[in-house]
Length: 382
Ligand SMILES: Cc1ncc(COP(=O)(O)O)c(C=O)c1O
Image 1 (cartoon, rainbow, N blue to C red):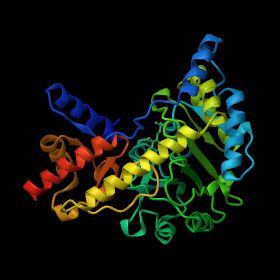
Image 2 (image 1 turned 60 degrees about the horizontal axis):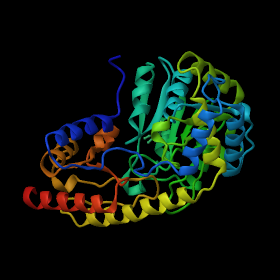
Image 3 (image 1 turned 45 degrees about the vertical axis):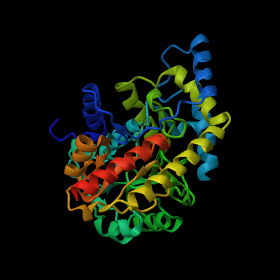
Image 4 (image 1 turned 135 degrees about the vertical axis):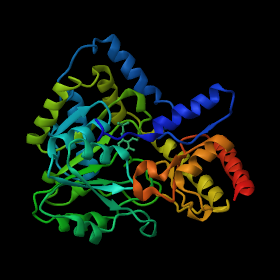
């Protein structure tokens, strides 16, 4: 258990709530979930499903009706032929990370993962006893990964490479050329890719490029996607993986051994999410874009902060090295003194030092309040 890490966002949330309980006013920019409600048509579909008997166990890999819809959706959006046998529905995107690493890596293996990156990758790699090999995401590359550097990290023990685009926490996005070069770098080595594409519908500029779309890569890729971020369904717990049928059978067996199945009525709602009107997704994305613009412009006006424009997801990741403060200390001071909850870049790995992550999944009013508070804190303390 000593090897298992965690996700600091939940810890900062607890601390911020404790301050609120003491009467403090806190602006929450720490947690990574849309502040919008789940669209009404999806909620109605779940309520109907409850009334229609979807209250029982279902197949471990997910209801066939939903797996068919997901297979179609992934075929359309990634330009590959996907069958329902290649889809495993799980409670959130996270279990695909958990199960894939558990299934593919062990003592003596190496797994390459983005750093700064979603902390569960590093946590799980360490947990299974494999070696966690970070690929540093650099600000000067707009937080895309450097494929030459990736090539230098690959060796005979490399079992798995984790990609995440659009990326948490940086908002970086892989370009077509990047995924092409990652695929050719791997060549015919026996290496799998876990491609975390949970933010693929939250893109402000440019297009989403999945490594799964590249000729010959589908068999080597486990695609992770889900409902949490796209449809504001974080609390519903539903996501999925797309992978070769032989691997899908193993991941399903891990489901049988852990959760048995994803809740049945939520899966019926998942069909409505993918098949129903998509305007709410566009509206949420447009809102996030507005907020991102305000946040980035505001941060760039604050002494010691400089912030690139993230192209996807709903986070901004300013460089704070000019403040002279270490990231964790600065995040703590902003919470304690200014009432703004943000995360230290180091919550996303050692290469997050020098950065903070602010989520823009909050109202413009609150984002402006946060900017004002951070600005006046900087004036008095820097
Ligand atoms: C990159 C990334 N992958 C996966 C997840 C997990 O998503 P879910 O809540 O659906 O488990 C998150 C959530 O923050 C994330 O940022």
